[in-house]
Image (cartoon, rainbow, N blue to C red; front, top):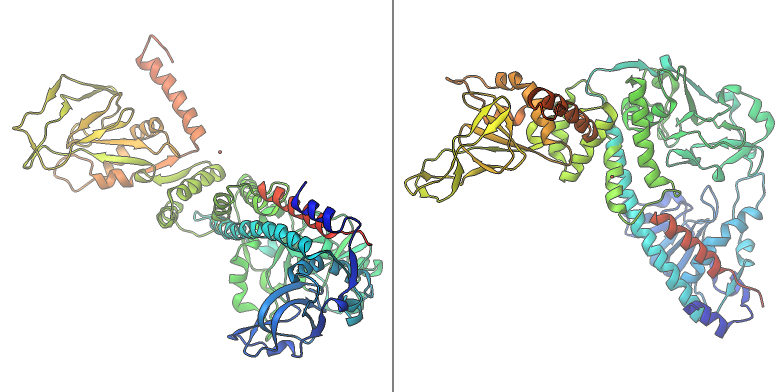
Length: 610
């Protein structure tokens, strides 16, 4: 039996008393207009929005519950302790005489808004009246029970807050990946939006009056306030009657439509995928549909419009004064890059998967949310950037700016998946060691392999000798590790071999060992051998034939995913054996936490009446 069960059994086994809210606290309202906020104010100013503004004067200094009295956020609960001020339609509950204020915060958050909607005029935007609050019944368990409830729910809130912070960070990472992945540096076909999609909106004379925004009905009315994480939150939608729905067929929505807000908060994007009733739009939204889904996927279009490019393009083309508008004659000329359909599909798949990690509670966020969050937001940006620059140059710049090797590896892997391969400089995918010369003034006593020779792709070693004290070097010896590549950078230039032991290497040699997270040494071996002439051509200006270290480091390698590298290596190994060896021939906790919190919240806040 839990501590709470014990307290209830001991202190209120037959239920608890319910009291009217006016008998538990004082209920006041603010006195100010909403526009009296001050940008650099020092006190919170609570209005009917979710978050408080700022103001330089305070009217209250207490522990209080603040309730939005009208507007789209009616019934929203804030808790604050200290000096603050309030809007005239914001209710202020303070001076509680029987209980712990945070207990009432939890209870009102759970049940009050449902009560407001149920008891409001169904043909108008709901609002709170003073009697509605004064007569609202609240259970009042003993203080010990209230305290335990607050302790339990606070612990869940603390965990949720931590996970939400991580989730916010992940969304930033997702945005980075999205914008970057949609930035095709190589030339791709581009078309104006009006050439590849239809763009429709509610005609001005068809605008709806306030009375036509219904609380219930059979036809959804979609507004920009319904957009949540790129989807439509149907639970928050208004409705219209049948006559309004059938008035314009062009804005009757269907799944796979892309929506963009054009008034108010501009440029918010949502994808229609979960309609269970007919739906139409208010006058503040465009509905955009691909004309040919064999050329442009609607889901790809959604991701591209969700990236910042549209609003950057339209920034200086908006109309209106204080309230800006995005007109249709602006977006018709906005260009959409059109990579091949298969690439569009892969981009959609990658970005959808990252969105699910952050937004779909059916998948949730596991204990390693921080790593997943960073991964999600990091990948989103790269997929959606299109510039006519060298992808290799841009990628090298981006890799250099990353804060961790893991981020760089993640970026490389996602590009390999989307595009089939990625071009990288050799020093980004392997460790390169240049041999040294035996000259200087410090004595060393080490063993070295003698007479290393290359012949027909194989390395031959002579006898091992001990360097005597009459041999000097001013640098520590450099080694090629077992199973690394050794390449001759002086005559005979370009001989390339794999070594089966650790050896020391001199001035005429370099060793190459792949970063196993993104490349295979054997794949690099075959690639270098195949492109040795290109590598030689990068080194010029010498008086004798040689390959300099800078050329080796900047040598570009085409790198497919590890699985494809291994497949290539296996094929070439078989051919190598056939030619040279006759004997052979040939990578949800939050869901669980969230459900647990909701379970306890409902269980803890439902009491039997005495």
